[in-house]
Length: 312
Image: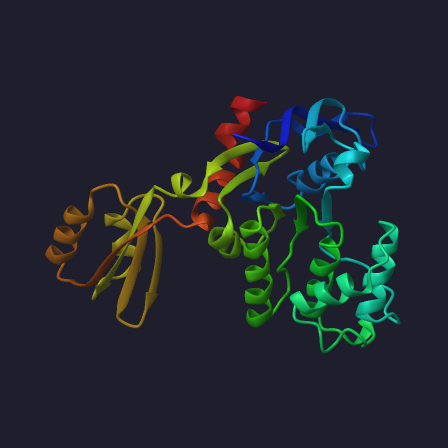
C-alpha cells in the first residue's frame, strides 16, 4: 500500500476567548492511498477545513504529525506536486479565462500558452477562454479552477466542495473530470457535503465529527449494512411504528405508507403482522445502505447524550 497522505495523532488546539483549550482536531489518523478518490466528510464545524490547512502547510498542528507525498506537511517539494481548489476560489473578474491560466502558470514559472489553452479545452471552455471571468457561470468558474489545478501536473489534488451549488449538467461535467483524474493515476482528496456525489465516485471515505474520525474505510465495505423499503396500503403511520424497528423512517402518501428500515431479518414477521391488521403489501424492496444513512447514523451516535457521557 502506497500512501500519499498519512496522519498520526494529529491534533490542533486553539484557546477560547476565556482561555480554555479547544481541540478542533483531535488524534486524527488518516490513510489515503495513491490513485484513489478519497472522501473527507463531516458536519459543519467537524474540523475538515482545519485538517486540510494542516495538510497544505497553511497552519501547523499542535501535536502529532502529517505526511503528504512522503514529506512532512508544508514541505516545498511536496507542494510542487499537489494542487488545491478551495470551495470559493477568487478570480479577478476583468481577466479572461486564458489570462487567469497564464497568471497562475506564471506562479509556477510556466510560460506555455499551448498548455493553458489545452487545459481550458479539456474542461470544455475552448469557446469561452477569451470571455471575462465575470461573465462565467458558477459551473464555468469551477471548471476553470479545475483546469488551473492541473497546470503543475499534480500527483495529489485537494478539492473543497467541487460540485457545491452546481446545476445537474455542471455536476456531471465536474464529476466526469474528477474520475478522469483518478484514471490518470492522480489521487483526489475531496471534502464535500454532496453525499450522493461522494458515493458515486469515491473509493474510500473518512467521516469526522468533533475533530475525530468516527468512520474510515472502503466505501463498499462501509455500506454493507442492508436496508429494506416496504410499502403498505391501508395502514396508518402510527400503526406502522408499532411494527417497525426503532431506526425506521416512516412516510405516507394517500392510502399508502412507506417504511424504510434496517434489514434485521424481521421482514416476514412484519408482513404477517401488517396483513393480520387488515392492510396489504404493495412492495418490498431490499437495498444497500446509502452513504447518507451511514453519515447520519454515525454522527447521531457520536452526538447522543449516552456517548457524550462516556467520552466526557
